[in-house]
Image (cartoon, rainbow, N blue to C red):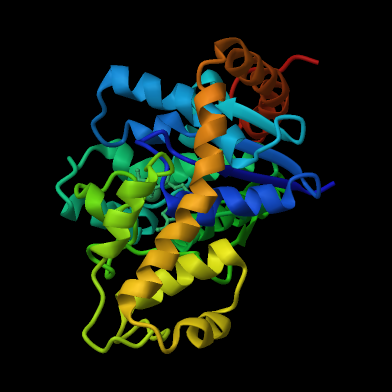
Length: 330
Ligand code: ATP
Ligand code: MG
């Protein structure tokens, strides 16, 4: 069975964009692949975090995954920092990565532009992401479009390593949804929706109640044309709402244009908000139950650690031997 792997940072409350771009593809494919879902908490500290809030977010991440429909029987769920091999493999890969390769990464530039401190970890974290993937020989990696460049780096690093030291890593394939790979901020449809966004008005969190969703969608930036039509260039705001509606309803963009073509934006926005809340309400109800079940969360993480530690150790030792680290006596 091929292996599928993805991670969502515990950098805040998950958003509808994380659900559409990261979680939904995992749910649709769980059972078809050997599925690994991890909490990349080492990535999260690449930007400043409050330790208490970070702990809280890590704990809640498992509960929200399950509430969204991730089946713990069909997925190995684990915490990155529990497993020491991720950072170790990352170091070896870093020694095989050029400054030029990392300088091209746009996420780093974006985050610096948004005022995040220029720490080394933020610069090198795509290599850690490559280690996260390559340690487990993942065949496919579901992500949003924002991670495409990092995935390409992981592929390049794997190919280079294989060429230099002999076949070691599986070359991972990105799995990017055709629609919904880049949900945009509601207040600024030129930038992607992010859970760490400064302005929460542009972001729908999975925990937002009906009133909040309606308010945020109603105040989403659109245009003055008042035609529900998909046109990313000229109508990025309304195109974003069409995309969200399409992802949650299963209707095609064309169907949505036909359905709402004669309606004003107010009517369409109300329907988008309604559909979002219909999706979120059952998730929130389950989340309230799961988040208090500490024993279940602990059990899931322990099981995840047991499974992943063995796989990671084996791959790490293979790499270590190939690059000549340590002493190995037969
Ligand atoms: P942060 O702002 O802390 O980076 P984020 O919202 O970008 O948070 P990540 O944890 O970095 O979320 O990414 C989790 C998953 O969600 C990844 O698969 C990523 O590609 C996907 N994702 C993130 N933003 C979007 C988006 N706007 N549209 C679709 N998918 C997204
Ligand atoms: Mg991100």
